[in-house]
Image 1 (cartoon, helix red, strand yellow):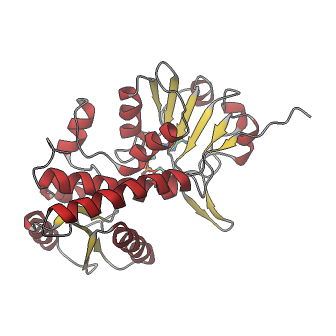
Image 2 (cartoon, rainbow, N blue to C red):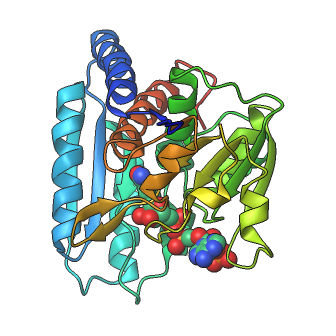
Length: 291
Ligand code: NAP
C-alpha cells in the first residue's frame, strides 16, 4: 500500500500536436510561395545509425509537406568537401534547414560545421550565433531536444516559474541549452555534471529534474524529491532495448516522468521540423527572423 505511480509524460501526443501545426504551416507557406521548403540531412560515412536517422527524418519531413535532400558523403570525405557541400546548401533557396549527423569522423572537426552553416538554416541550433541568441534571451533557432523538453512540459501544464530545476548534464546539445531555456521560463536552475559534489543531494533539491548524461538508470529513487517532475533525455541502447538515464523505480517517487522509449524521443524530430518551418518563414522575409 502507499505505492504511487508517476504520471507518464508520453511524447507522442506532444509530437502529434506540433506536427499538426507544422503541416498546416507548411501548406500555407507553399500556397504563398512558388517553392516547397526542404530539409537537408548531411551524413559522413554510412553507419546503420546514420541511415536509420536520415530515413526517419525523410519520412517525417515528407509527411509534413517539406521537401527532403540527402547528402551522403563517404567516410573518407575531407573537411573541405563537407565545407563545400554546406556552402552549396547555404546558397540553395529551397533549403530551409540543414542537419549534419553527429558525431563526425575524427578527422573532421565539428567546428567546421558550426562555422560554415548559415545560422538561418541551423535548425538544430548548433552555431555560435544561435547559441549566443539563446544565452542572450533573443529569438533564434535552438537545439531540438531541449526545446522539445519545454514543449512537453508546457503541453502537460507543468508550472516552471519559480520552481527549482536541476539539470544533470551540461552538453551543448542538451543539458546547457535546456538549463538556459528553463531560465527563460523563470525556473531557478542548477546545472549538475560529472564534477558535481554530492550529486544526490543536489538532485534532491529539484522540483523538476532533467537528466541528459548517457548512463543507463543512473538516477535512482533516493535522489528524487517526492512529487518531483522528471524529464529523462537519456537514450541508452541495451540488450533489453532502449533505456533512459533514470531508473524505472523513480516512477514510485516522482509525480510525473517521461518514459524511455516513448518520452522525449518522438518530440525531438517534431521540433526539428517546427524549426525548419520557422527558418523557411524567416528566410522568405516573412518574420523578423528565427535567426
Ligand atoms: P554528452 O555530450 O556525453 O554529455 C554528457 C553530460 O553528462 C556531460 O555534461 C557530463 O559531465 C555529464 N555526466 C556524465 N557522467 C556523469 C555522472 N556520472 N554524473 C553527473 N554527470 C555526468 O551527452 P549528450 O549528448 O548531452 O546526451 C546525453 C544523453 O541524452 C545521451 O543518452 C544521449 O543519447 C541522449 N540524447 C537524447 C536525445 C533525444 O532526442 N532524446 C538527443 C540528444 C541526446 P561533464 O560535462 O562533466 O563531462
